[in-house]
Amino acid sequence: MFDPTAFDNMKVVIEGALYDKDISGEIVITDRNDFLNMAKMSRLFEVIFRLPNSSVEAQIKMESRLDNLAAELLPSFQAEHLAGCYVKLSFFLQHERKIDYQMAKNILLDIWGPTRVITVSVVNHPLDLQNKISTVLKVKFDRLITEDQLEDLVEMTEFMMTTLKQLSEKI
Image (cartoon, rainbow, N blue to C red; front, side):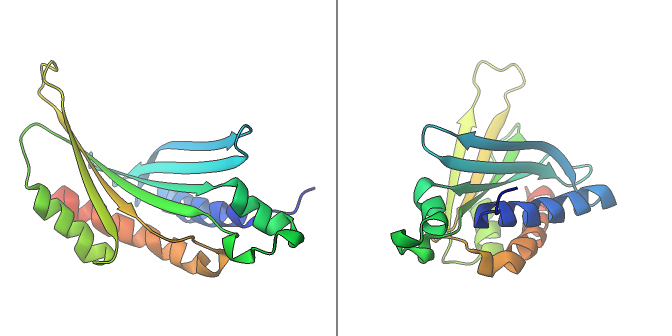
C-alpha cells in the first residue's frame, strides 16, 4: 500500500464530485484520462463532460510535476509549498457560424473573475463540408492548487456547470 499524494487526494475528490453529478443526471461524462509520464515523473488527470442535451463540453485538467511530487516525498527538499497540482479548465464549442467571441470571453470572466487568464482559440475547418468551427475557451489558474483547497475543487464543478449553461444559452 502506498501513501497517496496531494495529487491523488485531489483527483479522488474532483472525480467523486463529477461522477456523483453524472450518476444523478446533472452532467454526462464523455471522456476521462489518467496519465503517468514515467520519463518526466509527472501525472495528468482530465475529465470531459457536458450538460444533458447540450453539445458544449467542459474539461478539467489536473497536472502534478516532479517538483510537486518531490516536495511531498523528500523532506530534505524543504519545499512543502510546492505540494499540489496545477488546474486548467477548457470549454469546447462546435458551431457553424461566427459567434461573438468577446461575449463568450466575458461569460467566463463574469463567472471565474477578472484575475483569471482567459484565452480563446478558434479553428475553422475550410475543407469540412459542414463548415464546422471549433472554439476553445481556457481558464488558467496562475498558481498551485493544494489540498487546502479541496472544497474549492468541488465548488469549481458548480462554476463549470454554470459556465456550460450560459455558453449553451447565449452562444
